[in-house]
Amino acid sequence: MRPPSPIALVVFVLVGMLPFSLRADYLKNTDLSEGFACWHGDGDPAFLDPDGTEVDDSAKGAVAVIKIPLSKGELRAVYQQYETKDNPKGLHFHLEVYASFDFKRSSFASDYSDDINWRSTGIYYGDQETPNADFWIHDMPSTLYKLANLVPGEWVTIDCDVDVTTPADGGIVYFGVPPGVGTIYIRNASVTPQERATAERLYGEATFSRMN
Image (cartoon, rainbow, N blue to C red; front, side, top):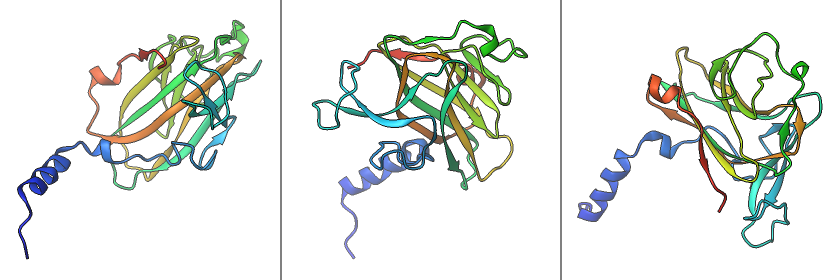
């Protein structure tokens, strides 16, 4: 049997050094190659061009996205169940969100939960809440809410880490939008395993990136 070449050894070592999170995603059909399969809730598959306009999938530069139209008087969300049979110590949530130019969340206090006093960004814990925020990640069973501000006409990247303190076979992640007008688009969603989250990373704010 021939020994592996030096190049093969280097590749093997480098792959072994990669964080496990780069090689595993608990979510399915994140590229929407199977339409809306595995996703549930108030969304539909769609395509955006680089200018943020909905187009046909054959258009130049078209990107597959999940489309969530806002509704007056009630929150809307898409969600997916995921399995974590490898018992990770922590989870990393990631996605990119685009708000249409006419996006505006409701200004009526009655459209939001009246028993919480959360800022429009940050991480909180609760159950079945409607935060007064532009967008949120809600994970169960951790009950985590990651809130984020959006910028109409721009892609916003949202990242969040959470410790897994109680072993579980999986969970459900919701991507929610408040009552209002306009449309939200989601791409590149993922839930990956992480080493135990630190307080600094746990309370990090959303980062912003312009559409290109």
